[in-house]
Length: 103
Image (cartoon, rainbow, N blue to C red; front, side, top):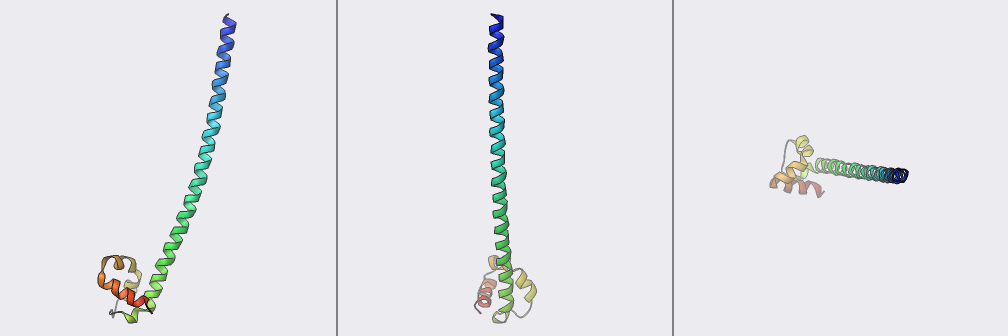
């Protein structure tokens, strides 16, 4: 009878080990999926950053070329480089920026 109890306990422990092994494999697989998702998010973030940089540089170039259409007479460099902040913060600059882009 003791032998039967030990056999059942052994089977029970073996089954527990199998379940733990399955869980480990599942959790490893989930981790791999998270890593793949993380890589996709990183790639998308890089693409978004590249797009924002292109828009920024495009705005600088367009403002620089159209500066003569604005009411500004000096400060071309800092007005061109700070265009995103000034467009959001200053109505007069926003109007002049639009004039510069229309060329």
